[in-house]
Image: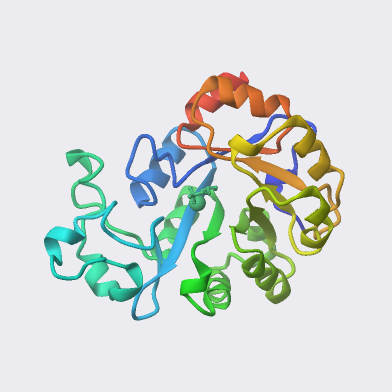
Length: 268
Ligand code: G3P
Ligand code: CA
C-alpha cells in the first residue's frame, strides 16, 4: 500500500496545506483545515503533541504561549509546556485571537476532534509526530487513535502519511503498522538513505537544502513499500520557490499558501 499522494509520479507535485491553510487561518486548528477545504485542497499537514493527562492534541510548539492566550489564563505556569497542562485546561485556551480577532474562540483541537473534521471535509492528512522524545509511546498511541477512527482501514490508508524528524519514531510506526505510508523529515546524507528506505516511503527536506541532484539521488532509491522513494519539500510560500522546487521533480510541496503554489504551477 502507498499513499495516493504518490499516485502522480509523472504529474504535478501534490500540494499540501501546512498546518492547514495557515496563511489564512490560525495554524493547526479546525478553522485552518476548513479553510484548506474551502480553497479546494485535500491534503493538510499537522503537528501532534501530548497533554499532561495523555490526550493527543494538534499544536506545533511544545509550549502553548505562541499560539494561545495561555499567559493570560494561567500566568503563573511558565514556561507553559503542553506536557504540563491537562486536556481540560488546554480546552479553555483561545488559539485564534493571536492570529486575528476574527478567530477569537478557536480552540486547540484534540487529535480525535481533528480526525473527525478531516473525515467530514473529505481531506487527507500528513500527520507529524512532534517531539517524540518528550512523549514516550506516542507512536503506539497515535496509531491506536487512528485505528479507532477508521484511518487504518484499507479505504483510508491512501489518505494518510505519518512523518517525523525522528527516524526512530518513523521506524516504530513502520514496525507497528507496516501498511502506513511514512516520511522522514530533514535532509539525510545520500549515503544513509539505504538505511532509512527500509522503513520510510518519503524524505521531506526543507527547501533551503534542496537541489536537483538531491531529489534525483532520493528518487534512485526504493522506499519501504517498493516504490520510488518520494520527496515533499517544505515550506514553500511564494511562486518562484514553488516553480524552482517543481523543476527539481519533487512529489509534493508543503505550503502555508496552497492557492499561491497551485497558481504558480499552473495546475488549475
Ligand atoms: O511538514 C514539514 C514541516 O511542517 C516541518 O517543520 O517546524 O513546520 O513542523 P515544522
Ligand atoms: Ca510540521
